[in-house]
Image (cartoon, rainbow over all chains, first blue to last red; front, top):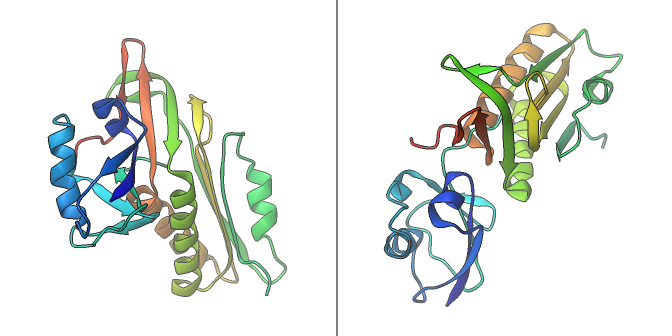
Length: 80
Length: 141
């Protein structure tokens, strides 16, 4: 299945991307996606400490992903 | 029902009067305002500008959650949370929180709750620019 990945903050510099389409096995979880992303982008070595949002809501590692989900990589925020 | 919250992310200059006017009400005995401003230095290093970027649709949702929670948690009348994105110079205003309430304590507490929670959960990032480079703030947990 294909999902969309959005990068923000420092992860745009680490990956050189703002947004990519990513191919993932059906029924993969957020945790499985993190492992696959680290393989693709070795610079994301702190990925396990970053938050993940799926379709604009914070998500835990056990959440199952579906085709066309939009997954955002959320490094520590610094607004305000 | 009257709208009790005003949530905004903009690349324009934030307007303190707009926030004040939104929360102002005859039933209220006070208004608490928090105005974030761009500081000229980080750890004694001179800052030239800050560049704010956000995941805007999610940031709006998270700011709305903060405002809705504040309305439940504190005895307040209205709350405005406005955040700027883009390049801000020293003294510019990245964030304004305005809260009105019948009695002042609730407004102070809700204002503090809103800015503290915003800094933890709203997906907005700032990059500090110095004379000799730039760095994402808080980028390593």
